[in-house]
Image 1 (cartoon, rainbow, N blue to C red):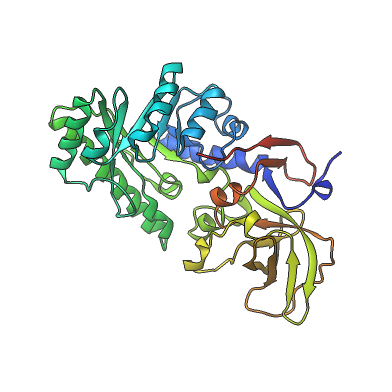
Image 2 (image 1 turned 90 degrees about the vertical axis):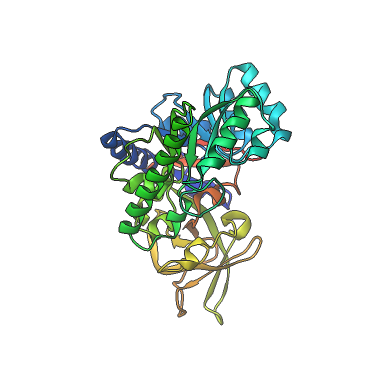
Length: 368
């Protein structure tokens, strides 16, 4: 029997039971609201994880790269939404997928971008919270101009899409609920404006992990996109979308040294293993580069990765003080700030299920 003690480090560990529980929780909530999940696969980048989350159903998915679209098409997924603003230099790859049978939907937020596409269903991105890209709700003239440009380019104005990324900065679950309603209302209003202008616009695609969990009304939305919920992370725990014990992803590390004069424990997981994401720095509790746990995944009180070099992680007590006596060779697990960013540093998942026993190794891909 292979266990976590046998692995080389650093290594990415995934708890399959926690993934299944996280998926069941969100799907149950969305079922009460009558709107399906379109899983965003950018977090996992792994067909086996998608199979676990979707119960084996090759349901509609969301991607953020054409590499994801290509890999998941090879795994049998056909209904694929590429939810990043499209530019014409990627058209040949998109067309190659469509020729092979992919039902690929693209995304634009300007007339210029719309003019560079032909032959695809296309969603128009709506900016409902000032987070990033998109047409502002209420700018009906711009919406009509983009939809007209799409039709002239032999595309279908298939509807609208928005992403409530601003929810990641919420201070309370009440604020997330408000952002969820703002997201829904803005997207629905934009779709209605397109319909009044004579475009069918059947799709109203909304979503983020926080708003997906705290939406109370999804009237008018046709699908919800989310991806981080599969693993959750410290940023999500920091805004009360989940508990720390729900986090399904961790980085296995080994103690390689000490600096007693500084209160440091050195581990072999630096930013190349954890990523440079410091998303909790602006939250109520700054978790540094990650929360340090024992080999069974239980957090060690006030122990975090306070600094990270390329291959060295510096573990210390939050606020200073002497760290616990962890000898050279001791194994630890570190909970990440951002599951997507930490996952991107690794090429495989070492799968466990509530124990140290290794149940499987699942490949994880990267690239664009």
